[in-house]
Amino acid sequence: MAFWDGYVSDEAMGTFAPIVVYWVYAGFYQLLPPMDNYRLHTRKEEDEKNSVPLAAVVKGVLLQQLVQATVAQGLFVLTSKANTSGISTQPSILVQILQFIVAMFVMDTWQYFVHRYMHQNKFLYRHIHSQHHRLVVPYAIGALYNHPLEGLLLDTFGGAISFLVSGMTARTAVYFFCFAVIKTVDDHCGLWLPGNIFHILFKNNTAYHDIHHQLQGLKYNYSQPFFSIWDRILGTHMPYDLVKRPEGGYEAKLIKSKD
Image 1 (cartoon, rainbow, N blue to C red):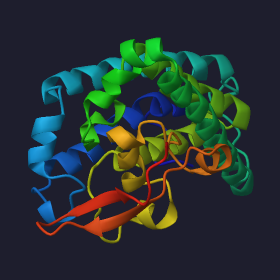
Image 2 (cartoon, rainbow, N blue to C red):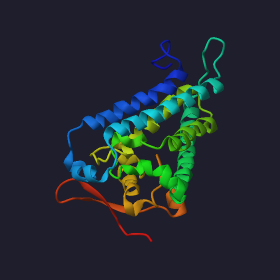
Image 3 (cartoon, helix red, strand yellow):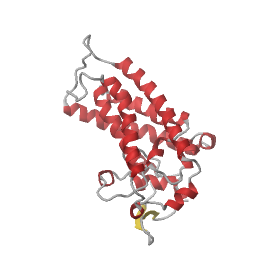
Image 4 (spheres, rainbow, N blue to C red):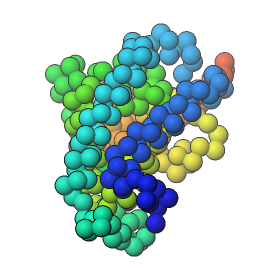
């Protein structure tokens, strides 16, 4: 039994909980003090390199989330297995864990190939994907700042396919999509904080994705949001060292440039 039983349906939670989690978690990062000793880029770099104001980023994210919520609600309604009393039978914990893992790999696979194609196709990059790269120095609230079409193809469709292929219920999807949102926000937070569990468990993390946002890394480190498997298999992995800057903070520094 979930804590929201009797208050709101699993389908409604699966639709709106990831949105709430996004703003709470990204807002947490936004409200932190400057944290100059843990930043991957200086505040000066952020001001000079990013070409879009925060207000426009917030509006862009809200637009994407509106589309996501619409698609999610329709998907949950079409796939609902609830009985006449509105109750869905939940699989065992082991089955849910397996569904979770399958969904992670499906989402990674979908996003890798769509993301990579948006870089390789000059028209798509120039008119669609370059919007996300206006944030050369990523920050948490900008994690889902994309062109609406990219948000639909990359994130919304990726989430829908992960849900359908894994066979998870709407209740399991609540946890999966909230986890995916938290991981995506963390990958864009621009901070290398001590003890961050995502940096410990995942090679694909804040520094890994920061490389991709830099000029030399645009054709590498496409993998998101969980693993770096496809980058490693298909030769698009860019190795780096995380080094301390003399003036404070860290830098994800390329070990060697690739031609």
